[in-house]
Image 1: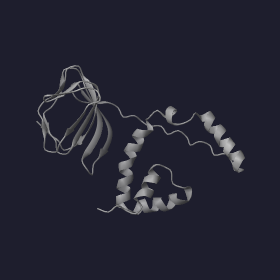
Image 2 (image 1 turned 180 degrees about the vertical axis):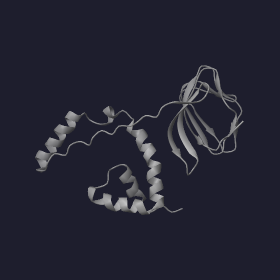
Image 3 (image 1 turned 30 degrees about the vertical axis):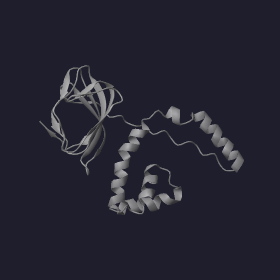
Image 4 (image 1 turned 45 degrees about the horizontal axis):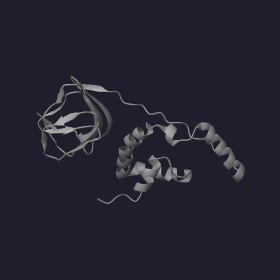
Length: 188
């Protein structure tokens, strides 16, 4: 499948880095192009998630931004440009999906039947046996997790191929992981 010629402009629009004079044309194109609308919708959850990163490390304090804007204005003879208002990210809530198993949905892609989420298992809890409908990727953040006979520790990554199954997934002491998987996995 060929990408739309406007795909890069759509990404720039999502990142809010388009020159002001190009915004109207890109918005008009996105309204008429299903591929670019899907691209924009797939980028939004990722961008919303990135907004949650600690901006105090990535963005200078407002006082420095103001001083820089005044200095640039003095050197160019133009009006100072105020920093953009901070965007607030609404962190999703943890949802109990089974006794001792909580999930926090980070992103979903209904077109591809995929979800990205944080999963937290309480101590001595198991996740049901399942068969992967698509690729399953798991990154363990804390605790320990057993997948069949493999013990994962913080920082470990597990790849589950489509069609493969996990008979026993459990944690003795509890754990938290990032899980990217299909919404069509078969439980049981």
